[in-house]
Structure formats: structure tokens, C-alpha cells
Image (cartoon, rainbow, N blue to C red; front, side, top):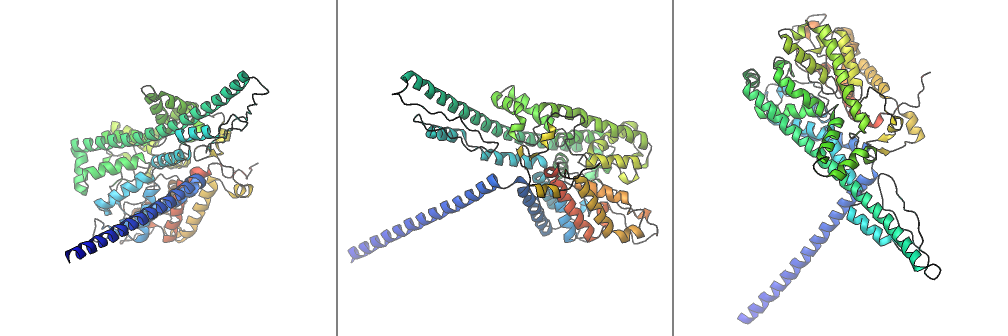
Amino acid sequence: MKLKMMISASFVGKRLHRLCTCLSFKLECLGRSIWFLVSSFYRLVVLRVNPFWIQLCYFPCLSFQGFLVLKALKPRTHSFRPRNLDLFFTSVSAATVSSMSTVEMEVFSNNQLLILTLLMFVGGEVFTSMVELHLRRSKLEKPWIAENKIDSVTSINGSAPLSPGKPFGQVELRVVTVPSTDKYSKLETEQVQRQIEGQTESLSTSESLKYRSIKFLGFVVMGYLVVVHVVGVALVSAYIALVSSARDVLKQKGLKLFTFSLFTTVSTFASCGFVPTNENMIVFSSNSGLLLIIIPQVLLGNALFPSCLRFSIWTLGKFFNKAESNYLLMNAREIGFLHLLPSLHSTLLVPTVLGFILVQFTLLCSMDWNSEGLNGLNSYQKIIGALFQSVNSRHTGETIVDISILSPAILVLFVVMMYLPTYTSFLPIKGDEQSSEICNGGRKRRRGKIVENLIFSQLSYLTIFIILICITERKKMKDDPLNFTVLNIVIEVISAYGNVGFTAGYSCERLMKPDSSCQSKWFGFSGKWSDEGKIILIFAMFFGRLKKFNMDGGRAWKLL
């Protein structure tokens, strides 16, 4: 009896073992199949899909996911809950680093502020370009794979060596046929063979160097991103902890020190312009030390990023990775990274940026030194405040004054600064005529003639957006002409398109017919627009975030 039970148990054990083995094998096959499908889809997207379409899907999806999370989290104020459209508008504004607002920032809870911080970080140009750089590196053959391919296809029996696939342009080796030894001497055969091996080794070395250089560049950008954020958060936190006036502001508004420091640093470096306070940086207008900490972050993450990146590569090349650093510095166009500009362009970019700041600073001080916006500040604080305001007009949008009370000349100058592309160079650069054909950092993609002729210039699209807004808000422009002026609408649209965040705001004091129910709020002018106007501005923010793909639009139109 015991023997039968033992035999039965052994039989059952064997069946279970076979069943587990079979199940494990099937699961392994299923895992491999899924991994193959995922990797195949990844390679398809990376190798064949235009980066424009990838980012066109990325930013709306990111904005929608941010909206869902913001909606699931509870706001700080229980008496007021933002509408779905306003939450989606805020999510789009954070993801596209536009900082346009239709609700007050102090409505959001600490968890919602952290979500907005994440949206600004992953939507910033430095982060997205870093991810794109790593994806572009995956298109290159790895050095050891390229070597094996070349070795396997190189032959001395009359066959031509094949060139590996290259995303930045095809390189073909010259066909060399090795003649047979019965016709030529053995010495001549060896010379031709050495010639083939030399060409193969040269190509392999060049490919290996390019691969390592792009990999090195990716780590440099990542280190740049991490260092600036860590140092920025540390400096802002230290200043607020040491200065009682700044610390009291956070205490009165119920903001956590770390959340404010992280939010402000990420927003500043990403050129977003959001600040957790309703008044933006107006409440810190007298804290010149905090403004001086933020100013370099604005420049490091925006207008001077190419120059600082090139300097970082040059500096690191003095200590290690010299070959990769030299390759990056000498072959900026070939690398195809949008923010790695040639030496002359990145050098001239510095005086151009400083010149724009100087022009704005001079005009602002001369026109509005005694204006209402700078009242209560001493001379030193006014100088630092004017410098801060001038620096932020180039795509960041943080402000220490209500810009609606500034001189009209200053507002027009700000509009021009917001419209200019980030890397506008004051002096002409040789070879830039061809650079307009380089899309997303170096790959020449010639559009079809029909599509190219249908694409308008950026100014044309801005005009269309402004006209549409004037149509949707025509009733309010008639009933409230002092707030709904064409200039205020132009500022709002160009600020959204340029991903800046400047706004003229809305004031109940400017109403032609006083309304006791009207309450002045600390949010953007678009907060008073109709739903149709807000939706149009959302499209303007998306369009502005992707404007780098349309820098050469409108060439079919000739103005004579």
C-alpha cells in the first residue's frame, strides 16, 4: 500500500514538474515575444518617425495625464475648485513651459504643486533635448557591432566592403577588388589587402568616436541639468532660511520651503515662469539677493545654454575624454544636437543676449524709474529689479511688477523680445542659410513642395491667433475696452506662443461701468476670456512649443 502511494506521489510529482516546466517555457516564450514586439516598435519609432510627430504626441499626452492627476488631487481651498478647462489649461501651460494662468497659484495644494513641478521638468527644452539625444544615439551602430559587420563583409576575393547604416548620412567605402595571385605578384596582393584593412579600420575608428562622443554629450547635458538644479534649490533654500522677510512670505502663504525652492528652480531653469505665489515674484521685489540667485538660472537654462554647454565640454575635455570633447567641438553640425552650436555662433550669442538685456534695462530705467510698479524700492533694489525684469522677458516670464502699468514703449519692446527665437544672433553667421534646412538639430529634411508652400511664417500664425481671439472676445472688447485692448490681447497671445508667461492681467479698477461684484484676481488676462478664447490659447501654447520645427516657414511668400 505504501509502495503504491509512493509510486503515485512520484508520478504526480513528475507530472507537476513537467507542467511547471512547460508553463515556465511558455511564459518565457511569451516574455520574449512581448520584448521583441516592444523593441521592434521602439526601433520603428526611433528610426523612422519624424521627431516633430513624436513631440506632437508627447506634449498633448503629457498635458492630459497632468490634468487627470491634478483633477484627482484636492486643491488647497475647499470653497473653490478649478473648472476642468482651467485645470487642463494649467497642465498645458506647465508642460509647454508657458506659465499662462487662468486660476490663482495659491489655489493648488502642495501635492498639486509637485505635479506641476514634474510637468515643467519633463516639458523643459533641456530635458526633452537630452532624451532626444539619447534616442538619436541609439540609431548609431555600437562600435563593436560595426566592427564585426565590417570584418564579416570585407573580403579579399573580389567582393566590395559594405558600409554600415548611418543616420547622419551614408558613408560608402571605395570598391576594391583584389586580383588573383596568378596574374600579379604576391607583394601587390598584400598591398591591396592592407589598403582594404586600412579603410576598414579608419571607418570603424570614426564610427566608434562618433558613438562615444554622442554618448559623452548625453552625460554632459544630464550632469549640467542635475548640477544646476541641485545648486539652484540649495541656494534658494539657504537664502529663504537666512532672510526673515522672504521666510515670512512663505509662512503667511502656507508654502513649504522645499516645495517653493524646488518649484521655483525647476520653473526658472525650464523657462516656464510659474511661481507658487499669486503675485509671482512681486512679493519678493525687495529681496535683491533672491533675484540675483534666480537671474543666472534664467540664462543657464535658456538663452546662454548653448554657450555654457560648449564651455562645459571644453572644460571637461581638459581633464578627461579629450578625444570625444574635441570631436564634439569640431563637428557640432555633424552631431546634430540643436543646442550644440558652432564656435562662432555660440561665441556671438553671448554679446547678443547681453545687448538685448542692456537695451531693455536702459529703457526700463529711463521710462519707469519713478513708476508705480517700482515704488517703495531704493535705488539698488530698483536696479536689480529692472535687471531681473529685462532678463525674464526672453522666454521665462517671471516678474516683479505688474507689467500693465509700465510704459507702452516698454510693453512693445517686451513683445519684440518675446517673439524673437531663443538663439537669435545679432551678427550674421556664415553658412546659416543652410541651417534653416536642418530640422531638430542637424538632419536635413526637405519637405515636399506642396507642403512647403502651404506652411506659413510664424508671424502669420500669430496674426491668425490674434484675429481669432479678437473674434471670440469681441463682446467683452466692446463692453470693457480698457481691459480688453488689442495690445493686451497681443501681449497674451505672443507670450503664450513664445512660452514666456507675461500677462497684462485684469483689473476691476479699469472697468468703464463700476461693478461691485467684480473682484481683481492674481491670474493672467486669459482667465477672464471665454472658453473658446482659452482653447485657442491652448493651441497657441502647443504651436509655440513646437515652433522650432517651423523656423523656415513662409518662404513661398515673396514680399516685393
